[in-house]
Amino acid sequence: MNETVFYFATTLGKIVVFTHLALILAALMVLGERRISAVMQSRLGPNRVGYGGLLQPIADALKFFFKEDVVPGQVEKVLYILAPAITVIPALLTIAVIPFGPALTIFGTEVPLVIADLDIGILFVFAIASLGVYGVVLAGWASNSRYPLLGGVRSSAQMISYELVLGLSVIGIFMSTGSLRLLDVVAAQQDGVWFAFSQPLGFLLFVICAFAETNRLPFDTPEAETELVAGYHTEYSSMKFAMFFMGEYTAMFVFAALISTLFLGGWDIPFVTAEQLAAWGNWGSLLGFVSFFTKCLCFMFFYIWVRWTIPRFRFDQTMALGWKVGIPAGVANIVATAFILLPPGTL
Image 1 (cartoon, rainbow, N blue to C red):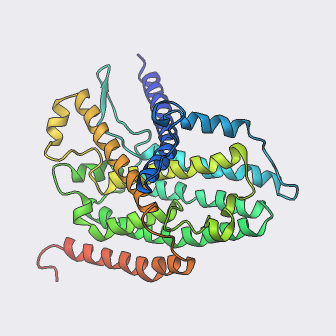
Image 2: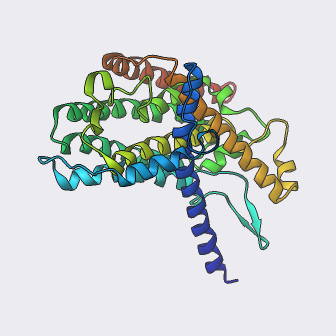
Image 3: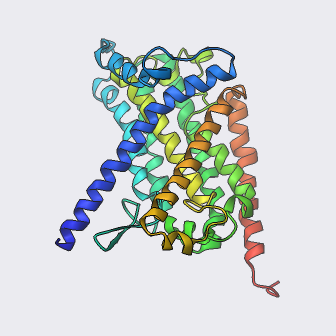
């Protein structure tokens, strides 16, 4: 097979598989959240459609497809229609640089389980993920309604604040590895200490920012049903409303994958060396993928657990945490890492 054709075919296959994996997981996470929250509240969740409610996501999708698509009369139509897509697309694009496992061997050629192995992978993630806020802000503004506009303004202020902390929280990792390439970050944790233990403050800050960036409780002030009806998507219905949910749950998966990659060793398996995984060939690659995916699922369960455990912060508390605590702590983590990495006798 021609090398160019093989590369094109494998890249297209990875795009299809990883994108569908994220979308299917997003749909199942909606069901998982409803079922897990029901258990936490001693009640029944959706359990009528399919065995144990497994077909509920399909029923929800059909409902959204056939529900009347109401467009209010005074909206800015072009931006109103574009906003849901702008929310979903950045979350899907960031999947391109996330390594899902060790390389597979196909027809004697190593195929890395990452769509695009960029030398500046983390910068690509931050650049693209930051575009998601435009969908929320435009949805609030284009709706031409007061409460959605207030939700959009809140979202922009919150994301700007926590993106600063998000960037500061990972600098210690890249000071330690000397690379912005995500595969190098995973390799630095193989057969060693995960950055969750060597960079505990950065890990804590990144986790907090993951909740804020995805508008999840206790940082869901852009929605805040008790104050803003439903926030920025109040005036949306049918599939446009569903796309906001797709964007949120896909972003949850992306951040779970980033946390697994940056702080939890990626596909690293405790007590199993990288050489052992490589010796097992494609079975080792599959095992690494399962390890990575399991870490993602555990953090997504943590998302749900926190939502039904901690009450919503007030907006001023959310902003104060980002500016007065998060940024100083991020700078302190960078300074501490620099001192630790200094060669002996430098000072």
